[in-house]
Length: 229
Ligand SMILES: Cc1cc2nc3c(=O)[nH]c(=O)nc-3n(C[C@H](O)[C@H](O)[C@H](O)COP(=O)(O)O)c2cc1C
Image (tube, rainbow, N blue to C red; front, top):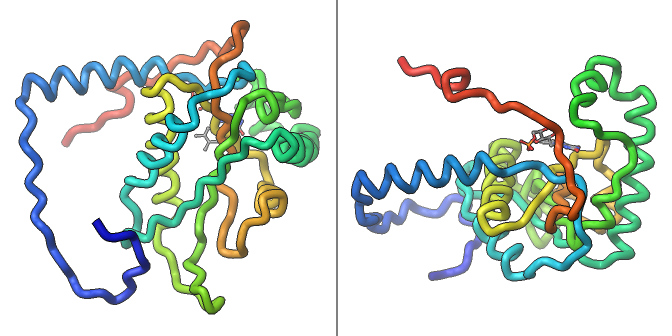
């Protein structure tokens, strides 16, 4: 297997793809199990400081990086933040932005939508969780000479990758939060990211605290989300 490399303008080079077909019984069993396991996933905001196995996080990022992406440009960077000092700096900057947001920038309608979640401008998960994965979108490809190439469907691609990351973390026994402090510009500055990268989300990862609680939310039923024509 060769390494990924930008392939702008390369010729079509097909290779066979003939995965063994899964027997229907096994398919049904697997889907039902996954459905049940994924229904147990919850966004966690109260973390234990216990460390998590690094390899589990790396494997989950590797899963995320298998996501489909526009023109196979894989426009994502996952920055693992394990240094407590850097997490402290991120928390201070995030809480600064969140204070302004909760003090009125969000507007009444948004604050109303958030009320059932019990969130506020204090973000202890940013320092309690043993690591953060900050996901960056590569808005364009930066060539080594400083010139750039367009990336396509960046929002969609990175969104799918983050969904796969959250799924992998959950199935491997870890809890996570999708945190989107707004605006997020400070993340690129604190983490010293190049000019083509824009922060997409901060994902604290760990185990739930012993006294963890989550909002009592109800999910839509299948009937409410599926339309078959
Ligand atoms: C794009 C996106 C942004 C989110 N931003 C935040 C956030 O900034 N802070 C937070 O506490 N939760 C955030 N969440 C988590 C949602 O509130 C949570 O997924 C939702 O309430 C459903 O709960 P569940 O994940 O436990 O099913 C975000 C989720 C998504 C998908």
